[in-house]
Image 1: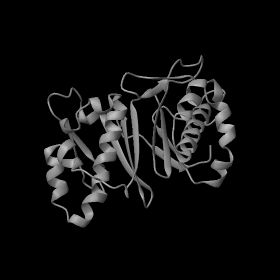
Image 2: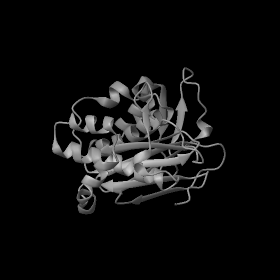
Image 3: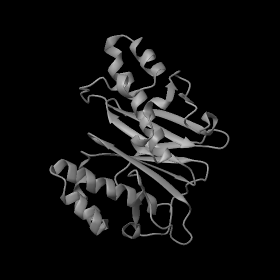
Image 4: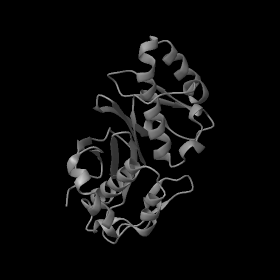
Length: 240
């Protein structure tokens, strides 16, 4: 088994076009539960079914690197807002917490112990058909975004979007948590900072945020609850 320190976050990434991963699709399917097979069967497109199988293979094999549990033996449940969680922690296993995200060409899984964690990946070439910042971002975020040259705004939009998605996923509320009630300040190369409206009962000092470019086309945002110094974060590409 791999060692996952208590005060750390590990992120594993999979390129959905990776030939080795695609060659293992059938083995990933053997790890899936009946419910997962039924969910996969409801997907219309082959590419989505392939990505689903790789995602389930990634989550199950990644968790099994940190606990003496066979990949096929993990059981999951979704909370009321749709976040998948471990149903029952096996005896002797650490309090593993995970979060997954997928976009065109990339899948990410973040794992930590005993901490709220959220990860989001987005393909920056995705076409934006509506004024999403104006509808969903906090006023200060919209102002800062609109100050940028027009040719930079789409790319920086994904800075905000991945961070906001990572935070609401870490909290476990999904879009039930209003995106305009918290705001990020981007100060590269310093880490992003967050502020909350009084309506949100949260403390900015307890959160750590990280951004990365796993590929030139993919933006990644991570949110993790911490209780002191920043946690070390390891990110790597794998074949589950």
